[in-house]
Every structure is written in C-alpha cells, then in structure tokens.
Length: 198
Length: 325
Ligand SMILES: Nc1ncnc2c1ncn2[C@@H]1O[C@H](COP(=O)(O)OP(=O)(O)OP(=O)(O)O)[C@@H](O)[C@H]1O
Ligand SMILES: [Mg+2]
Image (cartoon, rainbow over all chains, first blue to last red; front, side, top):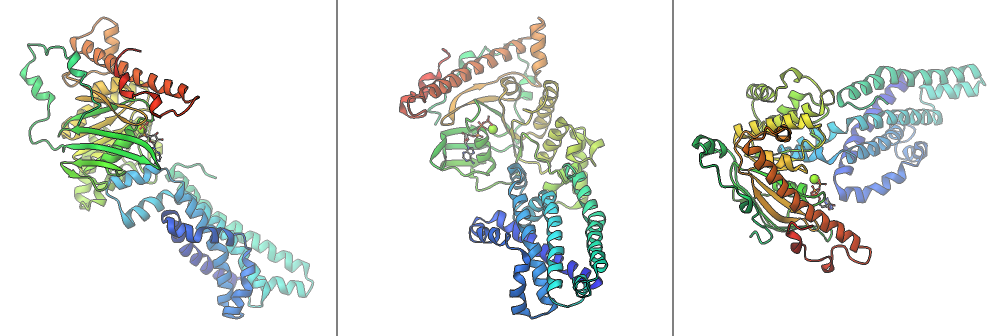
C-alpha cells in the first residue's frame, strides 16, 4: 500500500513536471507544435499499459519500469490539457501583459501559466486518474509489492474478498485524493479566478 | 499626407466667442513641457493574408493631445491602436512614437481594452502593481504608487477584491489606474466604456477627462459613440472602412471640463449653453460623415451580389465623402 502510494506520488510529480512545461511550449511555439502535436495526440490514444513491454525491455522488471509507465500515462493528458488551456486564453490577456512590458519568463509563467491555471488543474486531475490506472496495470503485471500485487495474490488464492477489498481501497484512494487535494485546489482556483466550480 | 483627409472642422468653426477668457485657453491646452509624447502613423498600410485592413493611413498626434477615432465597425480602429501600441507591425509605412519608430510594445504606451483585461487571478492592488513590478520598481515605492492610484480612481476600499468581484465600471477604473501606473507618455483606449450603461459611461468619461488631463498624457481614444468622441477629443478623426483609412477630421474646440450626455439632456429641456449647442452641432456633422460611409458599405454589400464587394466597381470611396445621403 505504502509502496504503491510512493510510486504514484513520484510518478505523478514527474508527469506534472514534464507535462505542464511541455504543454506550455506546444501552445506557444508553432514549430514544436507542428513537429510534436500529431505525435502526442496519437500517443494519447494508446493505453499506458502498452508501454510496459517497452519499459521492461529497457529497464527490466524494476521500479523504473513502473515509473516510466506511470509518467507516460499521466504526462500526456496533462500536456494536452495545458496546451489547450493556454491556447484558449483570451488574447487581451497577453496583449495587456505585453503593453505593460512583460516578456520572456515573466510573460510565460507569471501571466500565461497563471491565466491558464484553472484549465491546468482540470488536466492535472485527469492526469492523476491516468497515473492511478497505469500504476495498477504496471503492478499487476509483475510482482513487486503494492496494491497490484495484492490483487494478484487475491486472484491466485481465488480470494474474492481480498480482490474486492483492494478495489475498495483503490476507490477510497481516489476519493481521498479528490477530497484532500483536488477539491480544495479547484475551489481555491475557482474563487480566485472567478470561474465556475466544476 | 492627408490625401484622404477633409478639413470639415474649419467649415463649421464658429468664430471663437470674442470674450473667451484667456484662462480658458490656457486650461484647454496642456502646459508646455507636458509629459505626453507625440505619435504618428506615416502612410501605414496593413494586410492580413492578402486582405487589406488599412490603406495609406496617416495620423499625427501632438504631444498632450486627446485624439478620438470614430468610424463604422470593422474599419480598423482597434488595428490602428494596436499599431500605436506596438502589438502589430505595419506592412508598409512607419509608426512613430516621439519621432522614433515603434519596434514593440512598452510601458511608456499603455492600453485600456474594452473588457478591462485585468488579470483575474490577482487582486485589484496586485493588478495595479503588476506593471510596476515588471518595471522593477522597489516594493516601498510600488506600494505608495498603488495607494495613490487607488485613491485617484476611488477604489481604495476594493483594493483586496478580485476583478470578478467588481462591477464593470469599477473594473474599467481599475484598468485605467493600472494603465497609469508607470506614468505612460501615451495612453490608448479601445472602446473602454462600450459595455457600460449610460450613467456609468458619463461618470467615467468625466474621470478620464480629469485624470488624463491631470497627468498631461497624450491620449488616443477609440469609440463608436460620437457624443463620447466630442466630449473627450481635442480632435476627432473619422476612420472609413474597406479598407480602413482616414476619411475626415473635426476639431473640437470646446472648453474643458466638458459636459457629456447630461448636458445634451439639458439642451432638450431648453437650458442649453453655447457650448452645448456647439457640441451637438459637431456631433451632428460627424454623424453625417459616418452615415455616408456606412451607406457606402451597405451599397457595396448589395453590389456584392453581382461581383466583388471591394473591387474598383465598388466605386471610388472618396466620391462619397459628401453629406448627401
Ligand atoms: N488578426 C487578424 N487577422 C485577420 N484579419 C484581422 C485581424 N485583426 C483584424 N482583422 C480585420 O481587420 C479589420 C479591422 O479590424 P478592427 O478590429 O481594427 O476594426 P474596428 O474598427 O476596431 O472594429 P470595431 O469597431 O468593430 O471594434 C476587420 O475587417 C478584421 O476582420
Ligand atoms: Mg475595435
């Protein structure tokens, strides 16, 4: 359980660290968008579990393999959500910022990223769901501790109660993440940005 | 330079009341050494993917002048403002600020947009502080300037509010305060009051007149509303459409501070002053010019059923300058 949670948090954090800047770059740099856009869109339709064989070939049956799957699964939706959030900003926001002398990193992070935050939070929430799914898929496929392995054990022992118990834990985990993390963040963002609470 | 410009101000210029007190004349023009900069469009043309948006537009703005741009929708008024702001580059011609070609936006040229464009994630005071922060103003000086600006626009009580917690009029006042923060030498307004009700507009027009004159900044103010242009402008330039170009200009030689639409109401009630009558007459003249232009566009659109709407068979636009409809 703790093993799973740590994997999840680490993988998800890396996914955010990759996804948000990448989305920003995609939205702002047309050449990158042309080069990577179609590829990323295509990849986002690939279920993350499909990466597992590749991850195992590269990293063996290791912790790293599971991390790769989580990161890949979660980073893509975060990237795409960030990109569309930045792209859909009203143009006057950027124009106003530029007339006030904002350029470079100030414009990018203090204005565009901040303005797009409501959309990015939505994407981040989606990314978390993907991270959780990827984690389970990865853990199911090879023994390495964690909830997935517990599910496997339940299957081997034909222990329905154990399997359902693990499912309940997963449900609780995602509910808890909603309550203690995303719910409050979304409400805070909605209150400050004046957007509707989804 | 003003090939397409017709001086219609002269035609209607009532002789200045002989007894015009000297004090008034002083009050009307900015004092020498004013903070405002000059600006100019010199033979500017602008094309977007082959479509001509502006054609050979030349406009001079004197230091400290209040210039209003009026004209039909889609004529290119916002585009002219964006050119002056440095947000858009001309295809041909030059845009000058204080005699120097504009190479990009900068804090010495502030813009107030129609939809305020305050940053929704910052409180009002942080919004106003933003341009100062970008300019590297020290925190203490920044706080002092923000206080001063909040007082100027009467929003001190709302300093900690987020933009969506403010009324439309308050947001626009906040945007004006933010635009003034870095003491710009020119301030550009793009229909800032279009979304407000009549009374609020009236109030804010008075504020703009007061604030901009106090700061002695050069102002270019785009509006659909002729009464607004006549109230705020030292000069009103009429912008025609398809392609956007200058079709005329009117000098508004009325004393300040001026009365707005409420003055007009008084006129209707019989309490009109000489200035009220003059303002109405100037507005009438502008309205006639614009009506001729709008009619031209409507005719072209009707012709468009048979062919090009903007081709040479659309008629030389300059033929329709007259007041006849
Ligand atoms: N980025 C752009 N790409 C293509 N065409 C544009 C662009 N911006 C403006 N135009 C065109 O330029 C013309 C003038 O637009 P502009 O917004 O300057 O008009 P306007 O006088 O401000 O109109 P309104 O009074 O409705 O605000 C319009 O026909 C518009 O379609
Ligand atoms: Mg406009």
